[in-house]
Length: 477
Image (cartoon, rainbow, N blue to C red; front, side, top):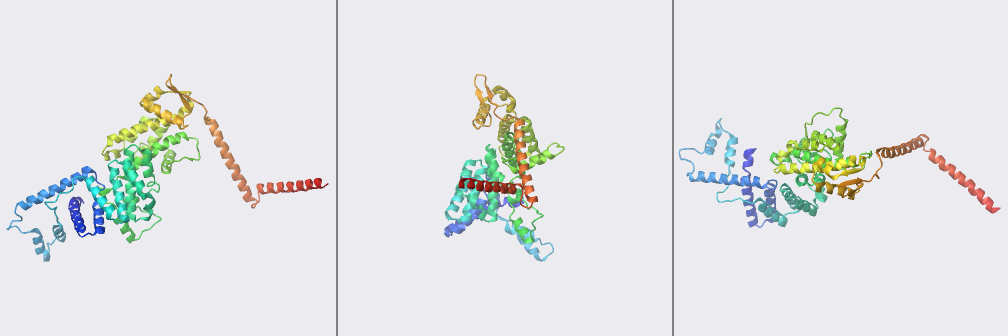
C-alpha cells in the first residue's frame, strides 16, 4: 500500500502530460476528464502534505539523475529484467517481480511539479468549469468545497455549496457523487466546529447520523444488514466504491464533533423545557435516544468510549458542574487528530462554560430573587463582558425574566413563571383531558359506533323539534 502511494507523483505527472496532449488535439471533453482525475488526487490534501509529495518527487528525480550520471548498467552486470525473462522457462521464474520491473517508472528529470496546491486546484477547476459536463462540474464543485473546508474557509465553502444548489440535486446523481457529497458535508461540519460554529456543525452532520449508517454513507466500510441481502455482484460493486484508507475521515472524531455539538445545543434546551413531557422542541433525536438509554442504566461506570464521555458530560452540565463536563470532553483522544488541537480545545472549554451558564440560569433562576454578576463571574470563571452579554441575550429573548440593577451589579428576577407545582398541575390537567378523550372514543367503539356523543346529539335534536313545533303552534294561535 505504501509503495503504491509513493507512485502518486508519477501518476500526476503522467496525467498532466496526457492533459497537455489532449489540449493540443483540442479534445476538450477528454481534457476536463483528465483534469477531474488530477483534482480527485489532490483535493483532500493539506498544503503541508502536498509539499511533502513535491519533495518526494524531487528526491526521485535526483535519484534518477544520479543513476543516469553513473553511465547506466555495468556491461558485466546483467539487466535484472532480462535475467528474469531468460528464466521464464525455468522453475525460478517470478512473474510478479518481472511485472514490477516492467512497470517501474520515474518522473522526467526536466519536469517540475506545481509548488502551490491552491494555484493547482484553481487551474484544474477553471479547466473543468470551462469544458466539463454537468457531472464533472458537480464533482469539481464538491472537491473545491472539501478543499476549502480542510483549510478552515467555512463561509466561502458554505456559500459555494448554497450557490451550486447541490443539496437539491444530489439525489438524482450517481452513487459515487453522492458519496463525495457526504464526505464534503462531513468535512464542512468539522470545519464549522473548528471555527466555533456549533449550530452550523450540527446542521451539517445531523443528516449523516439520522439512520446510523455513517460508515456506508462515507464509503468507509460495508454495513451488514439482516433485512437486506446482497448478491455477490452487488457486494463486489459496493467494495469497489470504498474509499482508500488514506482518504478516510476519522469516524471517532466525526462522532465526537456531532455528539458534542448536539450536547451544547440540547442541554440548555432540556433545562429550558424540563417540564415539557411531549418533547415538542427536540433538536437532535439521536442524541435524545442516547440520553434515554444512559438514564435507564442502573449503574454507570467510568466512561470508556466517545458516547460514554459525552453522556457523562451531559449529566454533569445538567447539574451545573461545567468544569467536570469540560474535563470529560477534553480527555477525548480524537482531538490529537486535529492540526490545531489546542485552539479547538480552548474553544470547546469556552463553549461549555457559556452553555453551562445558560443551563444553570434555566434550571435555578426561579429559586433566586436576584443574581449577582460578580458571583456568576466567579462560579463560571467568565469575564464580565461574557456574563453580561449572555444574561442580556436571555432577557431579550424572554428566556430569563429579570432586569438589570446597575448600582448593585445584579439581576432582579421577576417571578412571572409558574412554580414547579403549578407546571405539574398544568401537565396533569392535560393528561386528564387526553384520558377523558380516549375513554369517550373507547365507549363509542364498544357501543357499536353510537356512543354518548351520538345519543346526546339525538336528544338535542328531539328537544329542538318539539320546541319548534310548540313554538309554531303558539304563534299560529
